[in-house]
Length: 597
Image 1 (cartoon, helix red, strand yellow):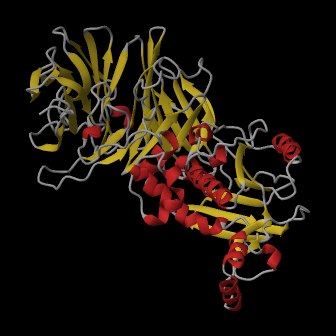
Image 2 (cartoon, helix red, strand yellow):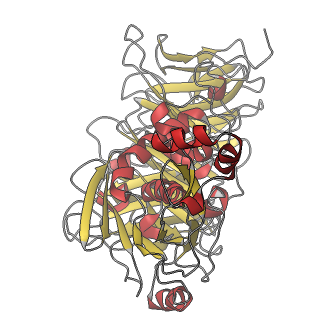
Image 3 (tube, helix red, strand yellow):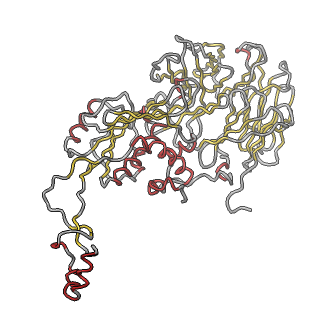
């Protein structure tokens, strides 16, 4: 690996990660290193052991004259006298007096929720800087975690063990007391660094205190180091989000092949997800992660550059140009990049109990995820909804969007036996079905509780939603009820018109829309044929083919507005076009596999 010369001092650590991550981490090292400084010396050594000979000089007492010079005196006395007159005789010189330096540098890290995510990148840089700093001073370096039992680890290059030490527990007085007892055995000249959030208490013995906080007004992190009653501060710019995520989650994995685009090979198991407006599309990659594509308004527009996220989410929402997502940990969920302050910065919450929300297995696909936000001080707050595989609709709510103090996310179960849900124009619609009754609910961004908008005396297996006609109320949505494997029921016009349809040819119903572009046209089911090559709209008056594909279709998605159709073929080609039109608005060619011509 070739690194810039200025990063050479930390090459043994940077060699542990791929080159593009090493360069990003190296830039952080260069920015933070001036704040750390050098390990300073202390008083001269009080040892009574005599200082030994350590060099050769041309002056000194004759008792220190080298034996070789005495041999010259015996063999050539005149030459000895000449050398003495010219100060050419050689003497053994005493070893220079050396000051004693600090023998040990201890770094204790806060691995709690305030330091998860971006602050951990700064902690990683500080671990490397302090380890190198101790080595330059001839001292040992050891590290520990404040929330963990008071054990010091001596191997600074074991980054994996440090990365796995994150926790949802905050530092409390009990943690500090345990570490104070352990640090009491250190020598007088040993130094201790406490690294973490500013809100936790301080250790009884701290040579340096490092506070890492997310800046609310500027992009970056605020890093301050207080040492010997002097404070140094820095606003640190962070690497790109995808590089930072890989540094914290998969730092030792080989780099993605961005130039060859092999890493963009799309997964056939996960259906793409449209944004609320239908102008952005997220597709899952075969080897994990997400790629975002902008859907142009017309075929003549210049296609945009795709955006990549290397982390695999549990669920995601596309809001404008931003991908908000929920990630699953061992026993926690991580919310990130949602609009507003509530879920905008990474928020960590414990996983709810299984009886209220069932977590899917790892790499089990994306759960349907929705987001509503109300900015009013006493309003409904910011809410993230997720629908699990058992039909349980859960919600996490944060209050205080415009206040200095934002509440912790509160979890509650909205409904059970949910058979369909969709978000459209700041409104969440969902249907629950049990005991021969199916109920339709709507919840606006400013409404704290859902409103029942319709009730049907039947139990159904699935409910699909279609876009409403312009300028209509939300109760005027299109609905499609699946009553059995082949029997469907279309509902329109404020639930006054119901149209039964049978899909008996093995086709798969993928959505509900209108048979034509007109807002007054009849409702129809969007059906993928049994051979997965034909897509048509089926209504009471007949069928209309909207798509013929040469390759079998693995995934088919209709956007929430009912205007755009996306399909992913078995060849991994992704295409988007208008439902009632022929112009292709987005086409992503399949990526050839390695070794395939």
